[in-house]
Length: 100
Image (cartoon, rainbow, N blue to C red; front, side):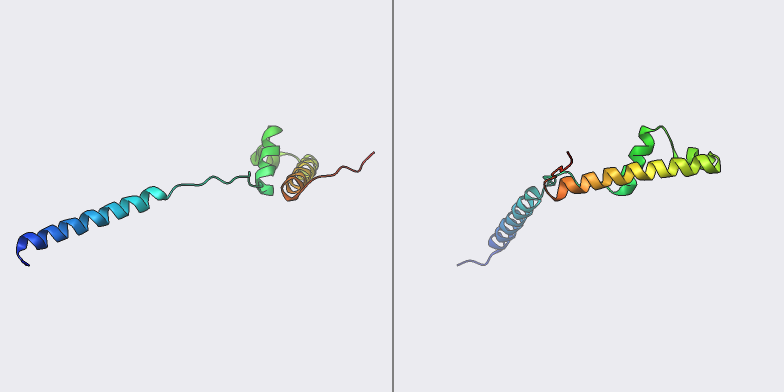
């Protein structure tokens, strides 16, 4: 058995190539996984959607008079609460409507 430089160099090269191949396999196996179900939006996101549908921004609400601002906030909060409840019902189970 020879312990010359050719064997040591060959061993190092094979080891480096094997480690590089293992690193590539690990890197290729990692990938992004999309969630199977759409996540529930936060109440703040729902509120932003409601305001966008009504063509309002936060600055527009601040610029309203006191009574108009109060009515706008009540209306937006009511719609936001309703949509948030509906989204939670859809994600937690089956919705049964018992109204006649």
